[in-house]
Image 1 (cartoon, rainbow, N blue to C red):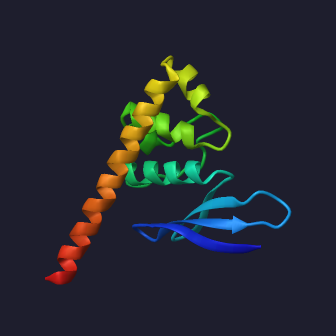
Image 2 (cartoon, rainbow, N blue to C red):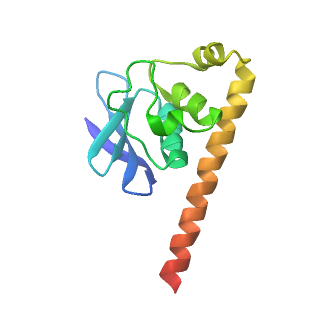
Length: 134
């Protein structure tokens, strides 16, 4: 078993790919305190990271099987949709049915969240660059 970092984020968060010999690879979202969530799909791990970025981080203890952490539940609808879509046991079809929206509309919401997360990370990086050059 070998592990390698495939994405790094602010606040010591990252996605680790775990290569497993006799099984599919796994992808772990990790924070400063260690492993937070495990995925079989790197895209779901990245989406989960995007939701973490947009919400400023959240904790999932005691949220239940179908619940959402308070920081996610208080957020805009696209955040909630993306959070559910990122869950290892849920799909875009499930999210579409829950929100009573066509699947392509849910995908648009999720893409909007991904774009916001990317913009936020770019803004954070440029702020870091400016503070380092001063």
